[in-house]
Amino acid sequence: IGVQPPEPFESEPLFSDDFVCVVAENHPLRAARLTLKRYVEYGHAVVAIGRDGGQPWIERALAANGLERRVAYRSPYQLSAMLAASRTTMICTTARLLAKQLAPVANVRLLAAPRELPKITYRMAWHRRLRDDTAHNWLRNQLSVSAKDIVA
Image (cartoon, rainbow, N blue to C red):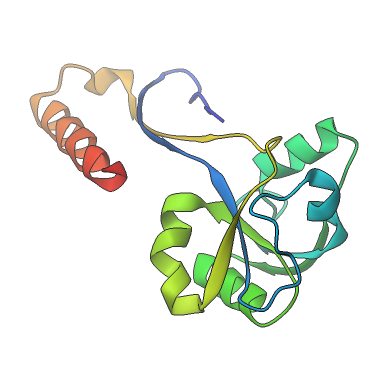
């Protein structure tokens, strides 16, 4: 996924990540990677980020394959959705880097998401009038350096 900002914004990629499926330690799913068919068989704890309260990139990937998932729990908070999954048979789909940080707190397992789900590209964006602003260039450079540390 590489969402480009609208005009008059410019952007630069910071880093990429992929989706993982967060499940309870005792979840019946045992495969290292889920198929789309298995993925939609379970209820989902969804982190509400889109205008409709969903995860638009995941919904689009499922729709492209003629599928839809059943949302059983919706929260604007990552940890809340992961904790809901930790105590049920729901699946919480989220970014791998974040899931790895929160997994020990939530006491969950991480499974590779279905291959059909897209990769995530995190970008920074700014108005083009700030292109040559010294302070803004410094800030963008700091963000680029920090982003490299995130994925290292």
